[in-house]
Length: 426
Image (tube, rainbow, N blue to C red; front, side, top):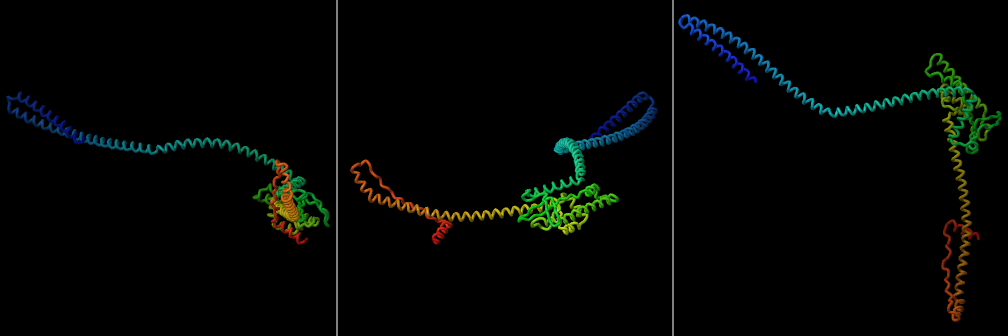
């Protein structure tokens, strides 16, 4: 297209110039015919017309060149637009190709996104369902917490009573003892009266140890000051913190007073073969730990009074050891009984061996007498009886076989050794 455009423009310009020249010649010829009678005038007019034609031709040529320049500029602009359009078309085709390739490449991603959207929708549905369940559980937890708070307040109010605390401590003591595997009135007794030089006493429990030994256990719940101190946060400062420290000091004093009272009763003097100590059972780990934390010397003070502070875990360990000792004692007693029975059985087996030997000798004598009887029958009686065959041949006395088997001799060491002993003694 770039090579054809100038050719078209040249043809147009040539046609225009040719038309202008033909028109000028036509005019000259027409005037020449009219002015043929005056040659000078014709020549002058001819020159003037030629000059005019040259000016017009020059002007037409200039205008044509300007038009040609404009047309070339227009052609270049059109060519540039064609090139731009071609480039844009190629870019659009390349972009469409890239977009198609991209669409093909992201097709799995689109599928994955759709799957993810479905999964997200399911998760959202599950989340809403779980949120509802969680809300219900939170409401239930709040209700349970309120119920627990009311129960705790009721329990705290009940434990503020000394008689209720005493019953709770005895119940905890019985639970620990039964958990250790001890049996009431066999391995332990409750509320047993004890008399000693100091006076009469009544511990909550007396645990029986193997070998006829015993140990006294007394339950105590020094809890009033501790409950008030527990209501104050550990991080409290100022007046509240000082009040908490004061209440803990009162709690330690209550535990110390209980230790002094138990040490003064000397329960071990009223028991047979008892270690010189009494177990002070406090049915809460926190009661013991808080007292020891507030006064680390409290344990040494208890040892000095021959009192062993025992929480539920400690007492359970001690009683479990006692239960194991009773099991070992029972196993030992059963082993001794089994040994006595085995000795008695062995003695009776030896006596039975003598009776068996006598029975064997009797059987042997019986067999010998039987064989002699058969021999006499065959040697003397049957020959005479056969002579009667001539009288009645229908009756024939069959021969009688001897007994060839002998009694089995005793071979067991236990039986033979006893027979040898009896034969030597005889």
